[in-house]
Structures are given as C-alpha cells and as structure tokens.
Image (tube, rainbow over all chains, first blue to last red):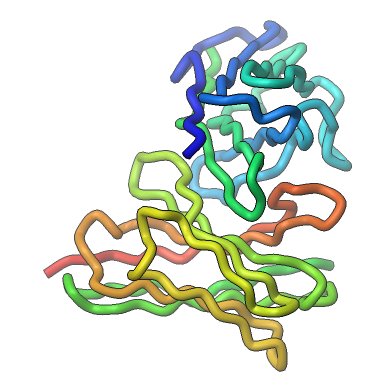
Length: 108
Length: 119
C-alpha cells in the first residue's frame, strides 16, 4: 500500500504570508494527487486535482506542484478564511485512495 | 445543484451494526462513483471504500475488508454503507463523497453522520 506523509503537521503564519506544505508518497504516483481543505465541523473541499490543477471556483492564491513522490501545496498570501486543515490524497491505483495525515494551518 | 444528504447520527453498542445512507440529487446518479470516508474525533481522514453507482462494483480498504458493505439503490439515488461488529474505535463522522468523472477527486461531499459506539 502507498503511504503518504505530510509536513509540517501544523504551522502558524501571519496574514499575507506565503505558506507551503509538502506531501511525500512512499512510491512514484506520477501526478495522481489531490489537495483538500477542511474547516472545523465541515466536510472537506477539493482545492487541487492532478497535483497542480485548480478546482473550479477556488481562489488563485492556492496552488500545487510536483510529481513522482514529492508534492507541494502553496497559499501565496494567507487569508483569515484559510484557517483549516489541509490533506493530500493519492489515487495511483483507482479506485483506491489514501489520504495524508493532514497539516493544520493557524493564524499567528 | 448537486447534493448528498446523509442520514442522522447513530449510537450503537459494541458488536452491533450500523447502516448509513447518502441520498444524491442534482446529477445522474449512475454516472459517478461514491466513496465513503471517516474521521475519528480529532483525527485525519480515512478512506473506507468505493462503489460504482453504475454497476455496483466495489473496492474496500484492506483494513475494513469483511466488516464493511457498500451498496446503492439506483431507484432512489441512494448509497449505503454498512459497518458490522462495531468497536469503540469505529466512533467517527462518516462522509459519503462523489468521485468526479474528469477529476479523480471527491468533488461533492455529504454533511457527515456521527456514529458513536459505546456500551
């Protein structure tokens, strides 16, 4: 089974800061990676699919990159409404999926 | 608009079973797959399995094989997830989510159903 790791597990940043989260797969998954945002008490929301494609309606301050085993998720300018936990998800062997452990983002 | 509406919260005793429903509307039900994802209190997301609403094919997470069954009723556009032999560590919020067609991600989610397992 493919294992996913994320770092950091949590971070605090100021409004306007650039925030970067990394996700690593235990084996090559090409670009088969999604990113989700989950706010407390809410269902997750798909932000990025296929590693770097922005889901319709998602603000352009969110972006993703990477392929193979190493991936990056970036918020270019952190906003108060971005406080949430972010999860990566791999789908190298459909229809199986694996989530990363999550990264909690707070405002400093 | 696309909606996935789940059944209400459940409290079960250890060893019992629970069946959660997920009623879809706003799209052609049989054109998409449905995954179930759970989240224990304060923990991350765990993918449980997937079912094709087109032909009923399923794929379950190894960890839950033998305890989980996913089904659909195309006449009512409803997906079901049944979990048996419940344990305390099955206490979680259970979500259904639609897998996109052009996007292999979960583009719509239900509101979640809290299942509490307690003696």
